[in-house]
Image 1 (cartoon, rainbow over the protein chains, first blue to last red):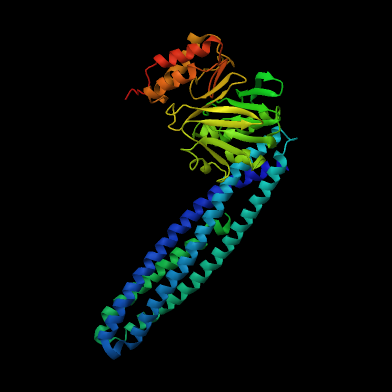
Image 2 (tube, each protein chain N blue to C red):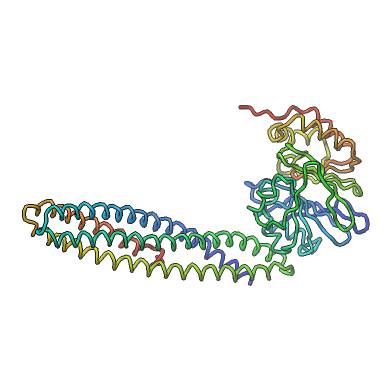
Length: 208
Length: 246
C-alpha cells in the first residue's frame, strides 16, 4: 500500500497542478464569452429599435434581432452553469492538491515506521484521494457536456446572425445600416464560436 | 530520521528531545521537538512543520505510540512550530492543541476543529499530563505576541521555545551547550532581530530567574544546562533587542 500510495502521489501531483492551470484558463475564456454575449444583448436591443424605425421592410430583421437577444441571455445562463462547474472543479482540485501533500508526508512516515498506524491512515487517505479524483472526473464530463450544449446554442446563434444578414437585404433604405448590424452580429457569434472551439480543445478535456 | 535523546527520566516521567535530522533539506530551519511522557500519557512540545513530520513521527514512534499522544503544545503560531498539526490529528483526532488564546482561530488553518484547541489565557495555565501539571509560562512578544514556554517543576526543565534559540553551523550542532561564549554568538543575531520588546524581555528574565531550572530547552539549537541557564538569562537581560539595521 505504501509503495502504491507513493507511486500514486508522484503520478497525481503534477497532473493536479496542470489541471488547476487549465481550469483557470477555461474560466478566463468563459469570462470572455460572457462579456461578448452581453455585447450581443446591447446590439440586439439597438437592432430592434432600428428595425422598428425601418417599419414593415424590416419586420423579419426585427424578429431575428429579438431572437438574438434571447440567444445572448440563454448563452449567459449557459456560461453561468459552466462557471459553477468550473468552481466545483477548482474545489476538487484544491482538495486533491492538499491531499497530495499530506499523503506524501504520511507515505514517508509509513515507509520509515511501517509497523505504526501510518500505513492504515495512508490507505484511508488514498481512498479519499480516489473519491475526489472520481468527483473531478465526473465534473469534467459534466463540463464537457455543458460546453457541447453551449456550442449547439452558438450554432443556432450563427444561423440567426446569417438569417439577419439576408433579412437586411430587404430593408430598402435601411438595408445598409441593417447589413452593418447583422455583419457585426455574425462577427461576434464567430468570435464566441472560436472561444468555444478553443475550450473544446482544452487539454483538460482531451488529456493531452 | 531525527535523533531522539532522553534528557530526563525519573520512573515513568520522561523528557525526550527529538533533534537534528541529517536528511533535512538546508532550506528548512532546524527545529527541536520535545516529547514529555508521564504515566503512559504524552504531550509533544512544538510538534514542528509539516515537511519534517515524517522525521519527527518516526523518531517519536521509536519512543512512544503516536496514537496515544494526547496533546501538543504550540509555543506560538509559526509554521515551523505547528504546521504538522493536521498530520498528528490523523493519528489521534481527539488530540488537543494548547496554544495562546490569541491564535486559536488562526491555527485551524493548519488543521483541527473547534474542539482541538485549548486556549491558554495571557497569564498562563497548568497543562495536565496524567496527574502532573506542566506550567504554561507567559513569554509574550518573545518573539510572538501570544507566546508561552513550559515549565516542568518535577524535571526542572524549562522549554523556552524561540528564547535561547541558536542557528548552529554544521559540525557545531551538539545537543548541549558546551562552551557558552562560543555558542551564544550563534544566538545573538537571532535574539536581536526576532525579539521585539525590551520590557517583555525584562519581565521574562525576572520571572524565569525565580524558577528552579536544570535545563533550558529552546526550539532551535542546543540545550543550556547547569550554570549556563542563569548565564543565558543574564546575557539575555543585558542584550539590546528589537533593532533592525534598516
